Length: 350
Image 1 (tube, rainbow, N blue to C red):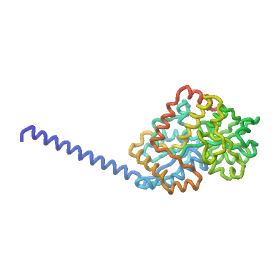
Image 2: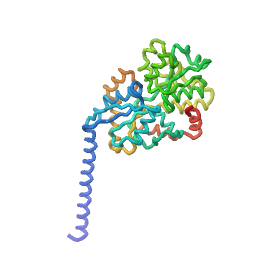
Image 3: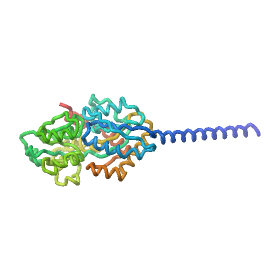
Image 4: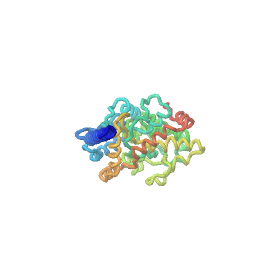
C-alpha cells in the first residue's frame, strides 16, 4: 500500500475513533441526564406565605410533576415570603444553586418592574431559565357588602375611597389597583403588608379592608363562600374580554376615556398577566435539565390527575410552555421607554 493509501486508512480510523468517542459521550450524557433526578428532592420555592393562590398552585403541581421526570424525584414546597415575592426571586437568581433542584414560583409582575428599573430587583430576567407558567392571572375586583359598593358605577362615584388590600408593590393587586385609580379614576386607598390573599380575606371579614383586586382563580377558590353569600360583590374585571364565569361584570378597559389610558391598561395589566405565575430556574442551569423540566411541566399540565386535582381546588389552568413564557417576558422587557416611564410614574411605591 502506498503512502496515499495508508494516509486514507489512518484518516478513516481517526474519524471512526472520534465517532465512537462522541457516541460514547452522548450516551453517558443522556444517561446522566436521565438518571440525575433519581433519589433527588426538588425544592419548589414559593414567594408567598401559605394559604394564597401561588401557594395553592405550587402544592398542586408538586403532587404530580415528579412522576413525569425520569427518576421520580420528590417535590417539597418551601414558602419564602417578602416584598411581594421579590425576596424569593432574588434568592433564585443569586443564591440557589443552578443544578435544576430548585424551582422558583414568584410574581411575574416583577419582570415589568425590572424593565422600569426598580433598584430593589437584583435579577436580570433575561438570564433566568423558564420552565413554564401555570395560568394567567385574570384580575377581578371585589368589594364587601359592608362597603356599600355593589357596582363599578357606584365605585367611580364613591365619595369615600374604599380600602383595598395588597401585599407589596410589583404584585397584581397593587399594580392593578394603582392603574385603575390613576388611569380610570376609581377611588381607593391601598393598604399594604399582607402576606397572602388568605390574609386579605380575613382582613375583609374583620372590616379592616373593603375589598381587593386580585386573580379571579384565587377569589373563586379562597373567597367562594363570601361571593356566594353576597358578602363580597364582584364589580370589575381587568381582562381584555369577559371571563366566562363573570359575564355581567364590566371590563375595566371600557372605562378608559383616552387612548393613553387604554394602552396603559393593556400593557400594565393585560400583557403582564400572561406571565404572572411563572416557574423558573436559576441562570446557568444545565440546558438538558431545563429541557427535561420543561417537558415534565407540560406533561403535568395535561395530566388528567393533575387537572382533576386543580378543579377540586377551583384552580384555573391556562398554561404557557417554557418557550412561550420566555418569549412573553422578553417582549415585556422591550416595552417602549415612553410607556415604561408613564407606568413607572404610576406604579412607583408611595
